[in-house]
Length: 240
Image (cartoon, rainbow, N blue to C red; front, side, top):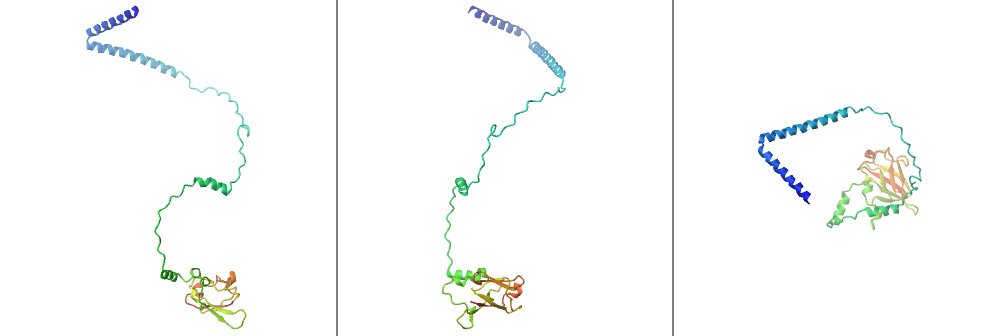
């Protein structure tokens, strides 16, 4: 305890003596003393740095001899160092669906639209009449119940056997169409026209095909723009 007291008392006296000394010195003298101390410190640091630089400059940067090669690594063995995958199989459609279906988000309901206005009978008739006169845009008479017999179909001849019928294709001519739908028949006897060639040869100028010979197709050599021109007459004679 006494020693600690003596030490603290000694420190106190030293601080007092230092303060008394500083109080007797001029400000300029103190600044000069500090500068002198700073210069000595910088000189010491500079000498130390120069010594480090000189030491580094003496170190040789020439590469040394190549070292011995390392030990070769082990080649991995299938089934020992790594697993061998098993052969896969192609999933079935049901398996694919079961995997994909949960990933599809639920559809977002759309806005309910307003009910459309149904066409009146007159509007339907008007729309049908506006269509071009082409076989693919016409209503098959066989689908219309209680339809009167078409005037384009005429019975020719007498007897109780297979009657001979005449069918007028003139309304269907449009200078483009070369395939026509005709009534079911056993055989086409004759096709005549009001323009050249006036008479069409079977299997050369035309062929009939389809169920009950209902499809009449003119050959590529027949020019529809002249031989099947709109406004001309084209008649068909067949055995029903």
